[in-house]
Image: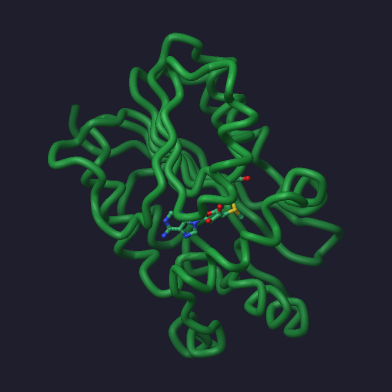
Length: 216
Ligand SMILES: C[S@@+](CC[C@H](N)C(=O)[O-])C[C@H]1O[C@@H](n2cnc3c(N)ncnc32)[C@H](O)[C@@H]1O
């Protein structure tokens, strides 16, 4: 079955629905997500092994764990975390309270570029793109506009699952797992690294991707 044939099964999610969802999940987020949002620490390590960025944007930064890790690797880099959920940003603000000078938080639904000109040399999506339904293609195009030529796009996210029941459960939780992201990413942004991983045996697959925008 092709990606587009399966797309109807994942219901469209509007801002109000996601805001409500994270109102309840924000407080439990850090205590629970370590057990299934795999690959986030490895992605930040892979980023840290590459060139030092001057301006970083994380889209869908949630409670700010990636922002804090990035700040530890790049203490002099200006970091922006953007999220549509005020409740997730509240948790992030608490976590990052000690670093207000270098880390800025913005509440915004990312469906167009943040700035008129490409500003960032590293943009991160960590388990966010699979939740932007519809609109993940638009979010990716926007990220490419916000990214400077030669800048890097780093993504970790769900890829797919062979279990229809799990796929349905994830779609109830606003996540689409149709393997739709990786082909589009590699087409838009030549990969520097991309890896696919199994989670819980063959429960599902997730991927890590770092690509570089042409030019620069
Ligand atoms: C699964 S959480 C991931 C949080 C964090 N990146 C991490 O790795 O722990 C997804 C986050 O993306 C945010 N989000 C989803 N769609 C968004 C959009 N269109 N614009 C901004 N944030 C969005 C949600 O509010 C949520 O905080």
